[in-house]
Image 1: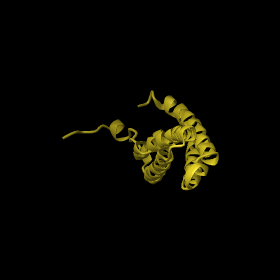
Image 2 (image 1 turned 120 degrees about the vertical axis):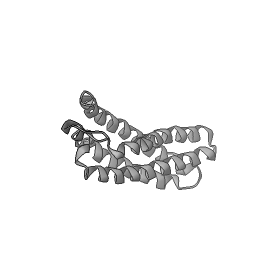
Image 3 (image 1 turned 180 degrees about the horizontal axis):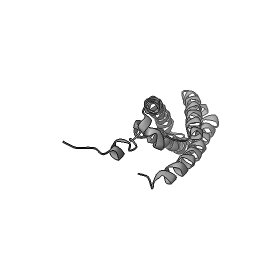
Image 4 (image 1 turned 30 degrees about the vertical axis):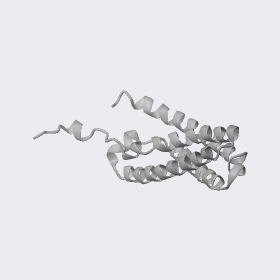
Length: 145
């Protein structure tokens, strides 16, 4: 039987949302690569890859939002919560990816070039900004963990 000291009970808990958040970033980073591959080759396989990457990113993004709402109710996750600006950017990224998914639902060349490729690039750039903002906070908290 383990006996916890008061400092152990007050330690920060690991946020559940941290399990789901990386998946959309990976999927939304690979989507521009597959769009460029489709643009250069014209092979429809790359368009299908882009559509599946966007769908997977949106599904895991929705799971991350649900897990984030659960983490809001847990007071022990307070030190590891992302900044508000990162949360807003994450929601904007998901909205942009949803619009991109609707564009990719089209058929053939016009589903990717030029609007799908532009939306994928914009989503990727917002992902980089969001990761940079979140990394600053986690870098400051690293000494506490």
